Length: 634
Image 1 (cartoon, rainbow, N blue to C red):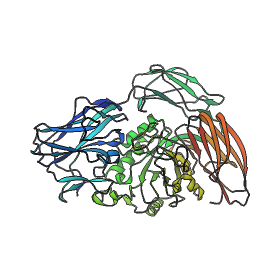
Image 2 (spheres, helix red, strand yellow):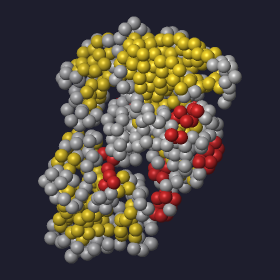
Image 3 (cartoon, rainbow, N blue to C red):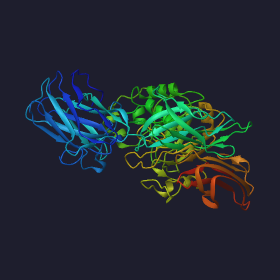
Image 4 (spheres, rainbow, N blue to C red):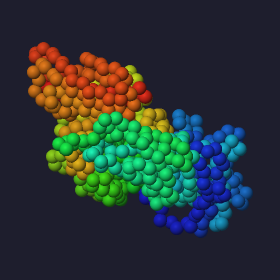
């Protein structure tokens, strides 16, 4: 089967009829009209209407006119049409196909229309009515252009069928057929009125140099309404970043001592928010705290450009990486565009970007591959059946694609790039027996799926995973992994605090790094040396040392440990726990919004090694985890 788009110029058209702007999660009826171009559709032809599931809370159905999501199709010439939904009745009522990548996302709601008694000729039209009397729930995430696609099988030569129990594929009647090209039409999904104000300032600053202040207004679904930027000196009109109308912010310092927290009130909406804490640096300090996300997907309608824009201008992140799965990144033109976007979005001193990809190289679980530079070839490292057999094998790939059939192949190819040019982070789940101590340097302890620190933890990962896949299992068998947190957003919104489809119910987490400057080289070096910690999304400040060795470090073991912990919360700190060899050995409770403690710990010198890390929990439920300090044998 040739999965490249058909070359036939049919002049077909798809358009929205009537209203085309909607408010996020509004229940409404939508009408689309497909017009037949120069080439007719024969009796027995098929149309497929597609919509991206990643942003849709509801689904399509064709059996219950009085229920939400009902889709009706009618022909202008009165031709009989048979309407079905291939995903209807399946768990989640979704369809997953790789056949249309990269033009159309792989997770879809699908309506199939069979042309009955008479053909459709040039000028004929098919009207799709989505929602009926009960309506259809508009996507919860605001987007300028939410696409619908139509594929026209003009002669009835194709079937769209479930091929392996999980993926659908287009099956041709003959091997020489080319899959028809999709056409699309779009609606706009707007945010609702503002309900929350978020203010972000740098986590540390020199005296008198606390800027910029970034203020965001969000609706009840966590869609950004306005993005404002200004300074922190008193009361000022603060301009919208897109050049729009200015507004007044009332500012006040809520911090104490050498800590600054800015209370912000936006006069138009009356909304108030308090920023993260910022600590005044001493002149001798060489490392600063920077915030970012290293794991998130942009495989739906939003490209990597939108992903980085959200990271920088909405979530106010300092550094960021986003991923396709390798089976999409390896398609012609995709990797080249990603490389170009990463390079173009990099703004030294203001915003750092990294090239990355997510792969499934075998029983070890998904891995996130990060690259220090952009001059690297695409990977194809996938064990899923839909990639290793069937139509995908016939697709043209980027000629530079490096294929990896096993996790050992992946390690070998990444080592071949040269020392320190690639890094692997374990996804939110991993079989830790598959490990490369040079490449796999970080573990994602928290994401939108929950926390995978240890089985039964308060924010345990959903769905549950085997005990062998939690982070404490890796630490317990001696692996030296820095701790990070992220999002795994599936909607190109790194750092968003709202839920997403498929059980991604938790807010995005954040990774903090200690680095001397905001450059790609400095952030990479900090990640490589595990100078990191993770949070559930709050910009909690956390310092942790053992015998003068900072988090992420290693040192000899003598049996005696001098512990130093400093923390500055975004809310009162309920509990700080010192964890040694996966056991809590000391707790500090109710320390207020800040704490600074020194603690002595000892073990018999016959114990060959010791691993310490810190877990912090605030009264509002936000958490932070330090990277460990390792003492003794590797």
